[in-house]
Image 1 (cartoon, one colour):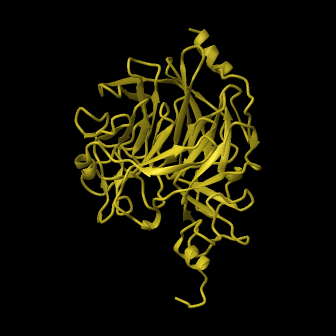
Image 2 (spheres, rainbow, N blue to C red; image 1 turned 45 degrees about the vertical axis):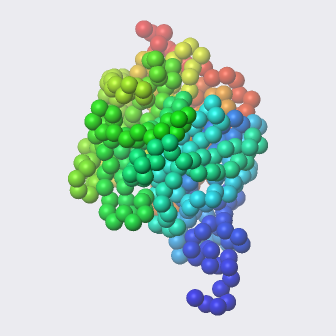
Length: 412
């Protein structure tokens, strides 16, 4: 190594992001932002928290030729107590004591006001350590702190294989992760890639982990899908699972040729009893195969529930989607939404914000050097007006079903 290389140069070469003196930032200005991918987000109180992922950005007007993307070392915080546009929003960064990861499972305990992060991959295999469960405790002002959370049953937890691209959801008290891939970048000292069977759960009240396959998981294997918990249906709520692929456990996973899950015959399960159900949907069925898309949802005042689905990738035909849909319950009817004006993308995450909007964060189409048309990788969708916008409205009117969905129900 050159003796005159500065400390900031060393950190930048190692890809350590926002280390002291480094030029790379975890929340660059809108003018320097290029792409963000594989992050996960949740909402607590007046803030959206974004954890993990990778980022590309301009430094002195260009993207590094050494590595076009870098891992994100901080947790990001977005204030939703007041209005903003995606171009003028200032994103806060919060130090993260553990090594940076992407594609983590993020589970939120709303009653306790905390969230948990587990699994995922270490981008580029950097700074890998033995995996742990981390808990984030907000401070009420957009900041907070991370701490390790020890399991009640450490023997079972130690035997688990951290993974990425699994299907993550959470109920009022339980974090859920179905399937996924264990690779050399998800687990220290792992030498091969494997499709993981079954489902892992973590009780956020008792801190007890469970792991099971037959009779416990709704799918033998599942990679690249999404899931969402609907609390208002059934005695324990229901978890709906969407899309993804079901590669075999034996052999290297090949998603382009693996069987896929369509979006017409939907799988649901009771998170307590694990009983499974299937329901045929109608309307404008989203095309498949589809993986690496985001879903989120909101309760409507009439007692139903709407689930928003956005983007993703067609592994078989090798293109990304730019479309979006609403699945309305209890009708199980899909409604096609306007395509995003910011282009195709996979790997975005999305959360409900304010009274009636959805915030989508990141996603990539092509390579890390293609600038995202969405400022800072952020887009907003108004669930009532059914339109995309670059402005978050903290004073929007209360959510109500869009007219097209109301007409469907009123028609009987």
